[in-house]
Length: 361
Image 1 (cartoon, rainbow, N blue to C red):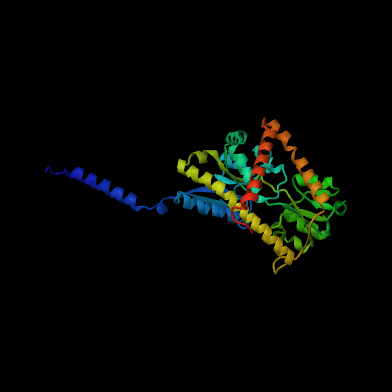
Image 2 (image 1 turned 135 degrees about the vertical axis):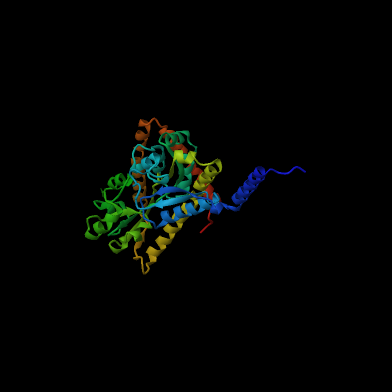
């Protein structure tokens, strides 16, 4: 048997040792690629908890190849420059709200036209529209972005200093409102006032406003129950032009298996987020109805049918202004809107047949 040269033997030994070292390194020991995630909100609440779930799932599903590094409170980007900042590389991925960045991703705003009160139906329909319609896909690509998933605020309610049940009750009332709800409250005889959530407490306390539109979980968060004692359960639409986007170059730099995980997780996030918002809405409503050590008890009213219907119609008519904006960008506005309405009907039928993915309550 011929003798092995020393150099050949050493080379073989080195190769064997290197292979053993590679095999000894587990996926968990490998360097995780941390994607910088930007969000303008605080590190608490429904959205923050849902995003932390996204991070945990991303790490598990990629064997620790990918993860998120969070930058909360607008440290990197705020709501008015999030998408543009992500596209330019200031962050890799993050929360985005198209109405705060006019003209960037206009197709997404179709989701804010119909007044949908169901979180799961709305988020599912918006996700389908953004991930399948060619015009939406092209718009994201042109802006250097990749759509990952959707979020929601849940349906809109009315908090007030005095009971508001009918159209007559709301006449000449000053109501803090945003978006299409400004036109909606004006249309029923109220005066819409533009204020932030954080400014609403003082305005309610002093009587500068008579009421504020908001979501169930915002009521205890901003302590509105301390300065207003009534909630009119309007269950108007939710904000759905709201979600997660990624820098397109970052997305394209991922392996095929990593892309599959990100896209699959984006879809799973819809059900996870919808359940969180749904449970928060139902749970918070009950806490407000009964009161607790931390939450003020408030009286909850059903609105008259004409009040709710007039607000709903006016809000949707105001939302239709979106069509003109979409057409200036040569987007098929009517087609996008019809596709969205079709998906709403599909998921409403699915919910009626099978219930929610997390089971009946």
